[in-house]
Amino acid sequence: MGDININSNPKAPMIPKFDDKIKIDVRYMVIVPYVSIHIYYDEKSGEVIYDIEEPILSEEEKGNLAKIEQTIREVVNVKMVGIKNTKENLLDYIDKTAKLIISELGLTIEKESYKKMFYYLYRNFVGLNEIEAMMKDYFIEDIECNGMGEYIYIVHRVFRNIKTTVKFNDMNKLSSFVEKLAQKTGRYISYASPILDGGLPDGSMVNATYTQDISSKGPTFTIRKFTKTPWTPTQLIGFHTLSPEMLAYFWILLQYQSNIMIVGGTASGKTTLLNAMAFFIPQENRVVSIEDTRELNLPRENWLPSVVRTGISSEGAGEINMDSLLKSSFRQNPDYVIVGEVRGKEASVLFQGMASGHASISTMHGDSVDSIVRRLETPPISLSPMLVNGLDAMMIMTHAIVNGKETRKLREIVEVISVEADGTTLTNTPFKWNPADDKFYHAKNSKIFDKIAEKVGISKDNIEKEFEIRARLLYALFQNKVLSYEDVQRVINDYSKNPAGILKKYGVTR
Ligand SMILES: Nc1ncnc2c1ncn2[C@@H]1O[C@H](COP(=O)(O)OP(=O)(O)O)[C@@H](O)[C@H]1O
Ligand SMILES: [Mg+2]
Image 1 (tube, rainbow, N blue to C red):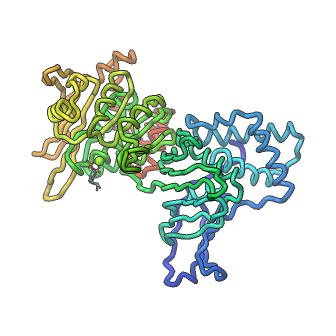
Image 2: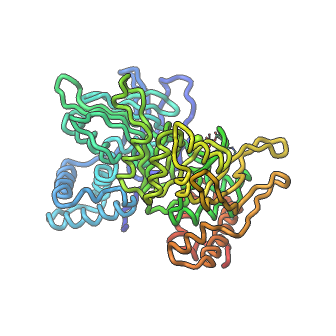
Image 3: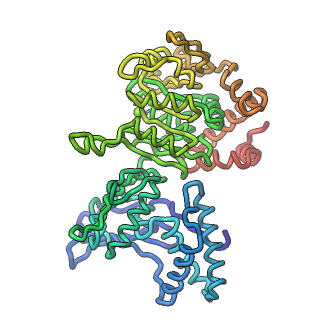
């Protein structure tokens, strides 16, 4: 991408403790090399202030930037700044487009000047404009705007509620910003439907209201950033929750859009496993997730999270439940739908979705294939057990005490072969944990590999070889301490582009 580089994920700094708020004065970078945050005590107001220090443009630079932005809006299909694109592609695209426009408009712009302007193009076209730096600030939990002319407040992990120096002074700008938020969540906001509840591609949740009523302060929004970092597949190897072979099995199944359900008791680690499995969903797949409360944090850009909304009014108006969310998510045509926990009516939508070719991963309370089949056939779900045929495999999670220690185990991976109308099931169990020796056993007879082989037209032999090599790679990653969220994500993505290079790097031979 030439000389342009933006790092919006620098290592979070250590922030010292201040015993007195009047001493607060810290500065840290959030978007390298462009933006730092300055948090300080302001004597005049007696408040702690959050100030965003962005590149400063001269009047001439501002003028040129406005011309470029204007032209980009006019000539370029801004919709292409959609969710299928990676950040690198977008930056590259903006760089090329801006340079083209500059030469067409006959502007002369110094290199340093261009670099600064590029930041604003990134901020306004790829990012979230004035609040982009806050979105990238690791320490921020919430961002709140209470209308036009009001300073935006944030919740900071160290300094808690503080005032920023950012506000929207123009009703049109605030309205179009809220429209942009809506567009990024894949939803729609208007006078007719003025309430937005949705998830941004980074996992943050947005609530917004939309009005231009002059008696009010106009649109408002709150962004709740998602801060939980999930455990990675290699960390789960470290906890002895599962084996590298089990992970390699997921990797193959998820590559070919198999339908998976994770089953287990309360707090058996279902959601944790689901999140770890998501590392293996191909990066180019579009993923929609649905949950009761936000727990998932998927390692991907191409993701629309949503959360069930209940109790808005006593009549249930404004209530969005899981089955309606699920129906609308199918309409968005995702490659994978992830359902946090299946409990009621949404089960029928989910299974019918699978039957009509929508791949899914879900979790459900239970302890075996039979217990799930029974729960599905009895009220309130009352489904035909035959629909369970849509599932390829169930992962059974369990609590276990090993050497006096509380652990979580992936006890079994069970493949669904057939389920009859009377609820009789035929299954195959390629993986099993043995409590006697605390080891995971693998029987080499995956029926889903057969199914995949047939579906995509490659030999089962090849799938098994690939499975085996991935299992060894995962073990090598674990041994090489490739454990963090970013590292694991990177290696898995790189493997899809350049398997030989990654195998070589970690010393795995074919
Ligand atoms: N593989 C694991 N090893 C150790 N502890 C785990 C593991 N998975 C989950 N836990 C712990 O159990 C708790 C519940 O996990 P969670 O995935 O939310 O369970 P569930 O979705 O089944 O209710 C988590 O807060 C975590 O501390
Ligand atoms: Mg859960």
